[in-house]
Image 1 (cartoon, helix red, strand yellow):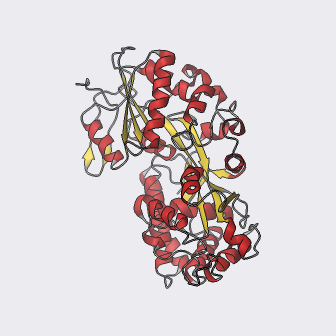
Image 2 (cartoon, one colour):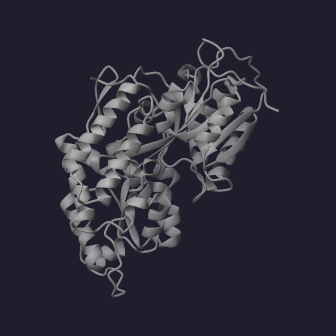
Length: 442
């Protein structure tokens, strides 16, 4: 049985509230044992490729350092299960999860601050990836080990059949979407294709996640920093309103978004694209192996998102290593993080055609073209470097994402709703959220 650990501050998940046992910084009063095995949780499907790749990395780490690691893959109800372990004062030593969790985990007192002086390869991290894990005060509470950004996947065979060019701006994107919807690109004589497949479900805030690729390119934003770590809501600004209106018109006026989009999470939209029901999809690189197998890599192409009203910014995401509070083996935690971000660790994480956990490397010394000669991966890397846009590291991004998803999804589902009015209501909610988190500019 694992020894119960101390946890620094309270955790609130649903109705669960935990109180800390000490006034000291998270994890500082735990007796240390460098021989204690490390329990690692990764948010991925048990038995899947992600678990295999994580175990491969852990095995290489053990061989290189002697520290022992036990890998547990959890996908469903990950946060709930983590909360349960927190209630037992028995957190895993390491968690590998989305970078957007950094603010939440820090505010809940479940992670300790990372001392970059003890991570010798920290100086090799790209500035972009490193900043995504920093809080407004500059302190680091997560260690990036993988990055990615969105690109536009297009059915190349359909585009060439209809005599269309790769879209360079939003007008051309809409034009191509209309052609894919009405031009019978699959040649079956039926009106059964959509121009664009979109993930607009409210589940886990998917609609907000997907729409960010259009919002930022239009010069809009969910919230805007005003200085000193303070923010104001921005969904009712002219730029954001214009972005929502343009995107909504794709569904409400042009009818080029796939039917049922407002109830579809990512698995369903993935299936829509690979089943030949839609001609374009905005998504990260992790689906390339799947679509190569289901569609054939000659059937589709990977291109940068077309220029929006302001720029070509797209959603940048990442995966981070979190050093959980209360670990009896902080030296082992640091060693694992250091190994994972090293050039050798990054290359191990990128191995395989599908069983890999590093999408784009975060180590400046790793050239993706040398590890993955497929030029599509270089395209993604260039998009990330030039146009990748991370969500801000605020105490809790989840309610911002969820409230925005609820509104965006509703506006596409009900074409009679007034865009400006609904976005103004959303900004009122966002103001309350920012005030609750103590970061409101008002």
